Image (cartoon, rainbow, N blue to C red; front, side, top):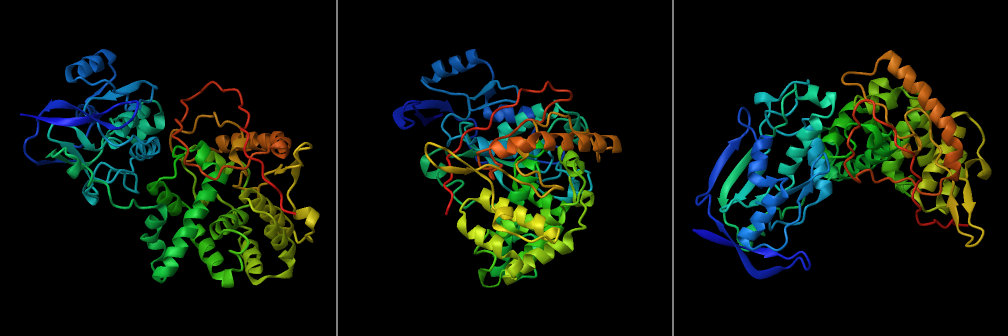
Length: 489
């Protein structure tokens, strides 16, 4: 018995009349409990995908089934193309989704007995799978799992490249806990009903977490959105998206960040409460306000201390000096109440439109507020460069609050130092990182003034491999040009 599977042409991407005759391997629906002692392994993932690195095998397969086009589904950790002979007519492959799953598996945050419990031990019987299955058709086509299974393969390749992950997995290969359903119909009527539910956003994940359960539903929803944006800002400006073992802001990484930075919830609540009649939101996104408040409160943290922990995957609140907490609370209370001391900042915020300009104004206003100095237009207004031909002005600086705030982390060097294999950084490592960070900041002050591109607040732009120990530094790349920003007058 065989079944026909419509195929796509590379040129048009549309289904054609020809069909691929594939033998039926799973005539009946069956369920496999692939978890605990018998999880999904790399070998199992390769088998289910029909994954191959052999171009001759791909050519033979195409000739056998009369397939004209069959591109590699993904590239492995060594940048080698991988063809998947059981994934020939699935939906498009999304690199961002694949990268998120790779990071989640690699850091053992996958749901199930083989995931990592918060105490550092395997979950075991303390946690079940989440119930989302891998779906396999009657002829062994992968109907659901084309991102998860490749992610497992690449995660295990990355595990072997760094001591941290080797230790995290106790020297054993990466595995995932899953349900697998075999023998499903491969017709469009069946396949097109899969994955039609709305995906959970990060705000949704925060909404149902424990942090705001004492608030009304409408307040919880607003607070969750504020928290999401605050983490987005912190993720960028503290270097998590540039240097850590978890550069991608996945759902589990967001919750892990909150667990290690619980004071951020107090910032969210304070900004939300002070925003009477939108007195803060009128000038700045509330999430940005909460994130800035956190970094203001942390502005006395020793330079390099927190960054060293970020690079080692061990950043947490215990490393932060919150001696400016009361002053940060006072700043946003004054801002919300319309206190005259911040009139200059509010006026300038009304005149600009980009996030980079607004954040620069808030940084400068905070510096003066924290030192009890008077604010003037000249002391708070960002610096600009003006093109003599077009007369278009672009912001020429990205000032930072100090402490854990790096401004734009891409100005902080390429981060080639290998992170520590485990635990917190040693005293020697902290001192070395501190000296290096101070040196970098001094060298980059002038560079920031000349920088014309806005800081990118979207950290989710690809999966960066953590360098192996003692890498060869690459030459510094020049920042790309971005669309000029007109300055409001």
